[in-house]
Amino acid sequence: MSREQFKECIEECLSCIQVCNHCFNACLQEDDVKMMAECIRLDRECADICAYAADAMSRNSPFTAQICRLCAEICEACANECKKHNHDHCQQCAEACLRCAEVCRKMVS
Image (cartoon, rainbow, N blue to C red; front, top):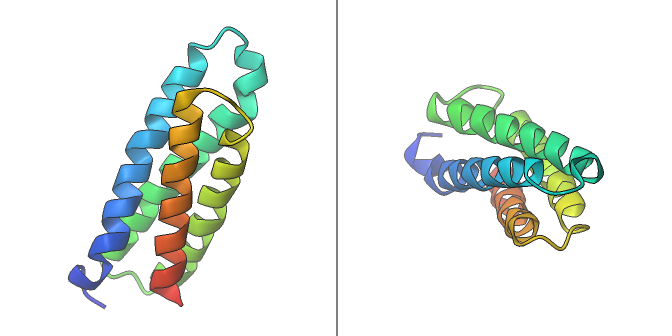
């Protein structure tokens, strides 16, 4: 597959990175940071795998399908954690993560 064939998935991954990074930073500003620890951890995991997945797709890695499947799993885990918190940044992050997971799964199916 070419980079163009991965375009939508790359764009969703890049968008997810930005939203996860915003959520990560916003969580660190919350009154009870300890309560946000798992959200913060998963924001980092998700942003990192999305960056790696976008990079893998852009260079047509032979492991793209496996990386994108893992990306979808981590995005979904991050979304599920973010949904537990009533902060706007967490809800926006959950939505972005679910969109990214859906596109990653669709791309490799």
